[in-house]
Image: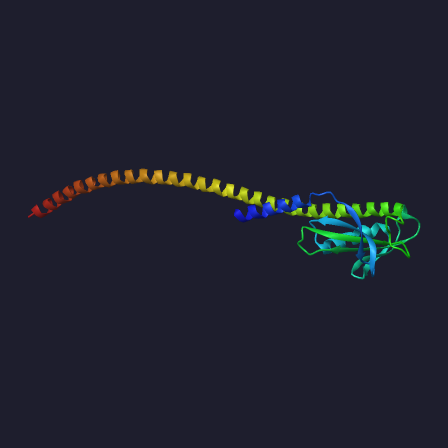
Length: 222
């Protein structure tokens, strides 16, 4: 019980820690083969490898060819209509370790000769910021939903075990009632058996007298 409580408590703390407003920031990061301007966001409750898988899947709608390059997920010639008619190369990578309550995810947009930044590409930057936040919210929610499913499965197992214990308790109590009835019948049978024994002893004594009398008659014949 103590272990179950500890696990549940730890899980609650993890969820509490992840209940934060997701914000996208701009910074210079080592991505795309060098130090470039990028957008960073904090993801909660998800491992780095899962975050990168989620990013690879999220990028599917932008039609670019997805691969790995320079330690990041690389989306070649992505089409984002809200950011213009030209294709864009996108880099995404997770920073953190497995089991960390939160990790940083870095996304860089190569517009072709220049990496996206808020100063030079304001309107495009605003759209990119929306994309990165949409990804972060989805990845975090999906990760928490998986934890929710796992927690609900554990709860369901506990409830099934509780039902099984209740059934066992009912059966055990029914067994006790059956045993009580059997004990009562056995006690009544003992009383009857004692009375039958006393009666039989009396019959034996009476029969002994009959046998003795007949034996006496036999011996008196001369």
